[in-house]
Image 1 (tube, rainbow, N blue to C red):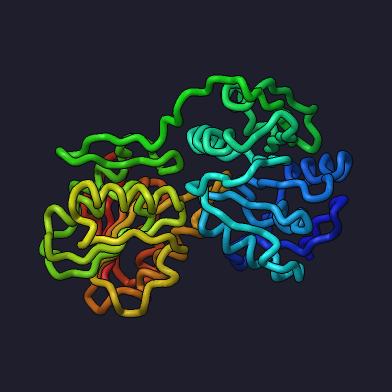
Image 2: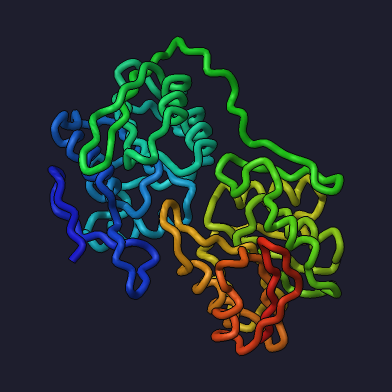
Length: 372
């Protein structure tokens, strides 16, 4: 049993999505530390609480009685929080889920921020949150100590106010920031954009390779399939939408769906297509990979698949995507991906599809094709 024991109670929590053999807990020592601190100082009645970047629901479930707003850029985190609320018989309506694109609409008395992996995301979130802070707001950051850097503390100083940290406990630390409402923090620099082949690509703060085209995707773009007019194409992990943009420009008759679990990525991809005038040809949606795509409905799945989940590295995400691609592709349909050479994706694809061809390779990357 995965039971979190904190001053707020005991809670049965699971990571989302649940995978066989996954021994990682749905919380970390930083969650325990911040909940312990909140238990010590107490929450005043009717305190307006905002929780930011709760991965699987440890904070949301434990603080549900305070009816917190919960800001996250992760579609999967929203699903995980909802699942763990139900598992612990907490009413879903107690927690108000919102994406990182939803600016807080009411004053905040208690702010709890799990420090994200992306410093750009933290900067964007603090810009969005700051207008609702007041001098009495309790601001707590929390993370494993190895993920708190001088740049992290500088952001809290620059965008919130005077900042200190706790001692490390179980390799986790708290960040304490006192709001300074007189600070001139300037404008939020996000979203940014960059030029790709004469088109603007929009990039919100939490998009992979924020503000530039990553080298893996750049290599994949050189080796996309031809003759896609009339094809149903899905870009999984679409990021800023540059793959969809490239397909739309070359194949006006293609129908393109772009999927990402980041709400900011979805907004970026949609904005990229709208700026290029391809928004009627392509749609961007938040989703858990190909989970919600129908069987035998797609001609091409294309992706630069992730090999990490937040701070955890593994191949579970790729495995799920490859299996789902086999399910959603029509007979003769193709999965085309780019990956680092050392990941050995060709072995997995042969096991699932029974075939795998190398389209291109260089010392770092390989472009692979598998057909159903």
